[in-house]
Image: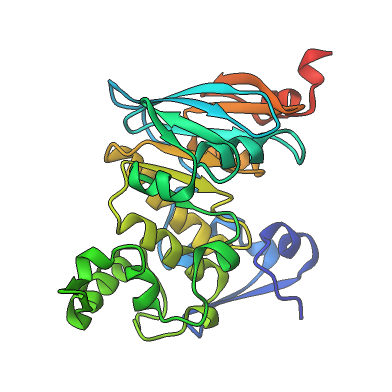
Length: 293
């Protein structure tokens, strides 16, 4: 019995696959008689277009950003409304340092002339951040879903300094429904959720603040394929609604499937800017430096 949400492994090794969803068996089939797309549909409960790229960004520049990483080379970034900009690069390339400087966590940045030198500055500037490490930086694991979703939006659920439990519950149920958080129980402990549902709670907490721009660090790391596709759908929908998104990921196919523009980092600096459509081979060539040989 081999248990995994990595479908490539399942299709390489297994003879038969059984899919569980919401605590129930929903399908069993011989691997030779099915496809990864069909298994994903069983896992999610509906048909999805796997990593379908969103349309063109809207007219009008939303942000012009000067980024100053603490140790690596500075660079500039422009964001249009409804645009998803992907940041890619291998470990040590400078991608992570660039992302951390972008949100003021290590190094600093300047958004439309407004300095961002800390995560508090980022929040005040309307920058919503979904951090790479959801357990250490994104969620209070001992707290409930309701408490976590309202954590950054206390102004919406307090009256005279006292938490209004009814308002907190309404906010939680809104985002639980919108992001398909399971189980649909606002009193459920976040630490007991699957990785995908924990990530959806973190995303909901950030979106509840109504950010003007969204910065995502490794948004689907440690997330099963079903939750991953649901998160991709949310990101694409937010972009269609006009929200600018920065997607920093070590998963190049993930970025290729979502971003209209890709910034490639190598050797501590911005090495290339690519515009969709672009192939995985081209991105890999720039990431590894083969394109410069």
